[in-house]
Length: 376
Image (cartoon, rainbow, N blue to C red; front, top):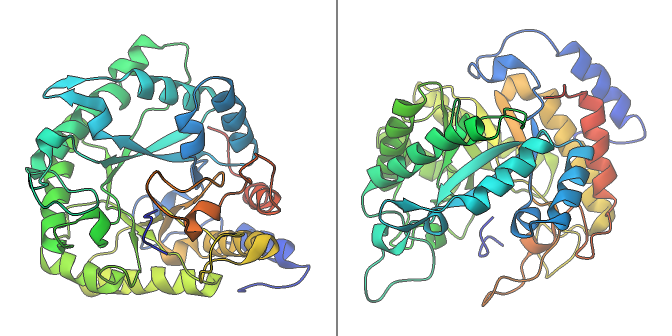
């Protein structure tokens, strides 16, 4: 979720109708890719929970238990390159080790976002740099960082060997960057060709460590504050994106369930026009219950309705859409970032800032119960 990014079903029978449709859709095969054919795994429903990540100890333990009880099977989390590689070739894993262990204890998988190079790896100019996060100067450097993480947290990784008491939930999916079609995450000017170079180099290096790793594109929104999603995706394919990733990630913020589906369908049509049919992972999606005026501010009751209707609609049509999973943004409301200003994304939580549940939390839980997601 970037700071500048600013009913299919109705009536009392919504849940029963969707349960029936989901039961009918449980079998069969889809053209969306190998992951979409697997059906609903425990990680189909996910959450972003930076709040729990940033506060270790009892607060984290309590919130991860609550998050798991809500029905989430996965947490999408930035793995901050600058925080981990403090000096060239010197890595600090302690904080992330603690978080990965806490997730595993709650049988939650993690979807890492590889993001934010340290100063000595960044393409940011020494003078006149613009606000935002610059990509690395050398694309392959992000791949090397990802490979370091894969050796630690991937299958047979050193972290799991040292912690045999933990449920083994190795990382198999890696997301390369975040929202590169927005200037704040590509301050030199969004470049689809530049992003494809980063995606290709990163995926190649990670797969040398784990040939079965799943490489996700960055989650891309359809925002007027950057290059619109469909235009950017076309440019990616013209730059040779096909074959550089396994799963297409989209952040389809929209006013309605219909709008969310339209964004996904539009992206799939563009991929198909270029001879590609990748699975799709919705890696951010949400509505604000309050905050400043926004197309996505819908009040607490509106948020609860949209969470339930949209997630159920996506699950119902997952085979048609080739849908790999859905990550809701966000677990808890938060204050503006330091030096930043208020915007809708700070009010999309299932919890209020004081930790009390909004009506959207039981809506999310009802979806998880309806889908009967299997345990890890």
